[in-house]
Image (cartoon, rainbow, N blue to C red; front, side, top):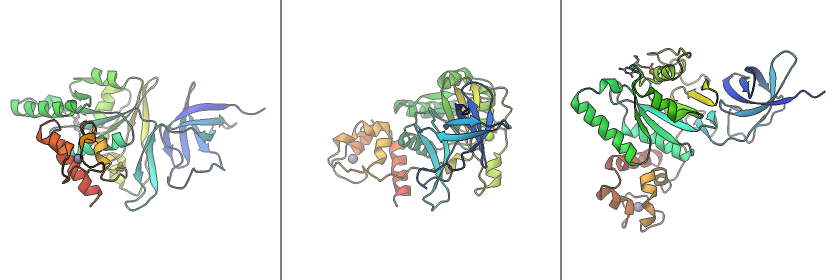
Length: 309
Ligand SMILES: Nc1nc2c(ncn2[C@@H]2O[C@H](COP(=O)(O)OP(=O)(O)O)[C@@H](O)[C@H]2O)c(=O)[nH]1
Ligand SMILES: [Mg+2]
Ligand SMILES: [Zn+2]
């Protein structure tokens, strides 16, 4: 009799072992079928967390993965800085949740915009969660927070103001992520672990610590992990997301990843306008008219500079 093929979700990868949660039943440690062929050789890992796979159980209680289903999307980082090979961090992501803080540490809009551009390029919906809102007590800080939150709301991204410490806004995050596979990213120290613990009390992640990953440095292969919060809702905690590769794009493409530019750029005189120095530029006009926030335009120029020197 042929062993039965089952479908499952990959929640952890360590070396050549993959932990797979079947549609029904408990997690199974699996290996990849011996003659599994990589599609192309651009990626260093054939299976990533978030992958849906078909596997069969062996007699010893471990499984064998036969097939990795097509991915809806995935994020990569380069294996090394100059390498063409990429490492898939996670697959099939429904929402990128950028965790940011106005103070301790201060997240720059440049950093937020880079992550947003990456999400747009990968076709992953994104939202911004400002944590440590309990620290925004004095009037000046409060005003800065309001300005920042309205900046991102004005260009179309959902924004939440929360406190992992006090529990403020945690229910709003729960509502936003329900039924989704959500990738949390943000600088170390913004409170990602604290937030994940608040969302999922059983998790017991260590707070106030650098992730193992950042301590071990670049050369180890520690991977993202997926935590189930409730049936159908999964959280992905990624190691140092600054490594999260900016996708390759040419200067003409970048404005398509800024929603507020996307809606005006058809008005540019030149079809291949990069919105820097070209005459008849509708984007620059929209910045001058206050329709496109100056800060976003400034960050746009910086990203172009960095990626196309
Ligand atoms: N005041 C305040 N501190 C927080 C909050 N959330 C986390 N922290 C603190 O920020 C530090 C970093 O938190 P952690 O969750 O480890 O950040 P991570 O590096 O992003 O995982 C710890 O000292 C936490 O206690 C919050 O909502 N308010
Ligand atoms: Mg952490
Ligand atoms: Zn233009």
